[in-house]
Image (cartoon, rainbow, N blue to C red; front, side, top):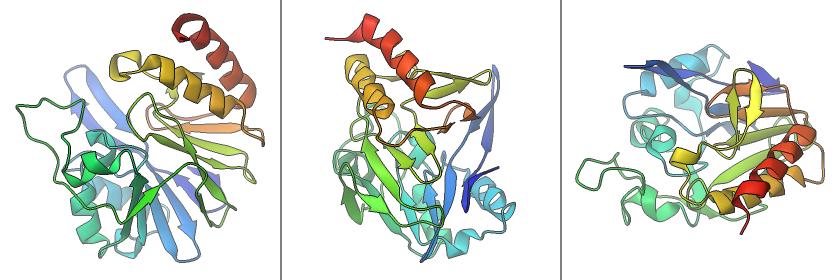
Length: 233
């Protein structure tokens, strides 16, 4: 699905006991080549390459990978994807970097279990950093709570929000973050508030879980109001 000019919603899947789970990274065309926003779980690199090919893109041509945060379903196949993409530049928020590069253990993983292969972060991002894309500027929005250093990305000219896990799609509706997987709901609630207050209105919201939802600023405002009533501190 094309969210805006040169902005493509991808879909990766895995089978679980309760059914098929879907994940939705994004490919963005830039002047220097394709950029990926998140990459999926360990073992999903072939799926990622196939999803890119559906939009005429080649994983080998990817020049940058931007992680919204360090959770394994977003960063798990980073090492493999980087090998296939011929050493792209890897970006993540400065607070997420230690978990990706191996200095810290992923906070939602079993400390007695394995972790995904660490990868160095080439550029540590902060709030407001902007990438040039075919669809216009893509600006990082610091949205912690679900994970340290969580980032969403706003394309104001396209009126599109890449919400990552700050918001979810559920049965075609936009909803708040998954509480079970969000260590700090009060912080996550404030982050939803930041998304509701973006200077340029959002019309389309793409979520890593739930995919693209035809919902924007008014719905985000309503979700924030509901969350704030329960989680503000």
